[in-house]
Image (cartoon, rainbow, N blue to C red; front, side):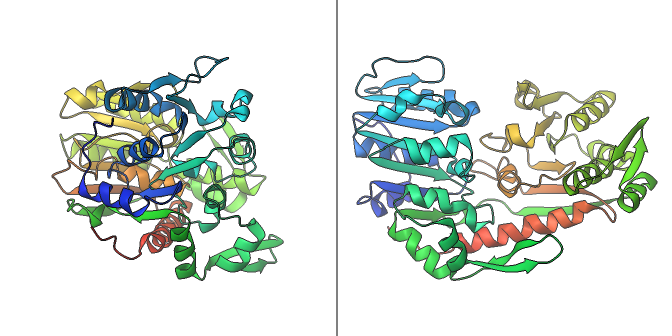
Length: 417
């Protein structure tokens, strides 16, 4: 039997969804989605169970089930192939491997749990097509703190798994405001409509929402824009869509390339930004977290930290080393968004510096929760290094707008105990 002792808010969510066999726990980071999801899986009591998660979370899920549900056979399914799957099993597999396991198509009598279910938002990806079309689960559990990232259309794949069969075209007509963009020759999303109806429908299909502030009194969050002087190269590139830097010519001959190079000219190619970063680092001996996007950014930031003789931890696609963060009070932890914005517990620090911004709202929102979570006792500070007159200011505006949309979706009737 389960050995978990749940918090009151977790019990309330499970009680609210007791009658549902397809559920979505859209629960803020730090409120224990792992415990809520695993307890629901245990309650549903099917012979077989699949947990699909990010690669970085596989060991966490394995340890969780082994500790709290010893009656299950816990199998990491991306490291082996199975001719026979024993009953009372929990198969743990990552999103990038699940569609490469065709034997799962024949599995029946099972519960499927998707951790960070927003990762199936692109219904045309291999992972999404396999999960949506090829798997035949009896029960579904979706877990996410950022189910829509401010883009309501990104929830369509998830609601279909909940049993609300809604085509993308119909969803767009009923809930999305659009206008024709003559410049790009396509429809442009300008906002959303019928939000109360959307929330009611989601609740009817087993989706519940909860934000941290509904449960715990966490310290204040302080957002600080740090203005950085622009450069001649950035202005030249913005004007001509081409500019030389360090002996290399950068040509923005497509809109996506132009934006990418604008971000880089405003980022690691801007020495003024490195100077402002140096000033911030030198202003405190506290633990610092620095988020970045590109490999070149990591190289220049790591070099600066070494010059300042600060111990470094790193989380990116190649390295996951948190020793300095754990042991050194003056450490600096460099995190690449894709590798570390989700899942890390970094509440030993209360200061995050954004060297550059991501263009993905879910990663941006989750990055802030690395420090602003249960166990944090100090006010949290977020420093945004923004080059004057650059694309970075518009990116921040868009990220804030998407947060506003997400917050609106989370607002609903209070769940009673």
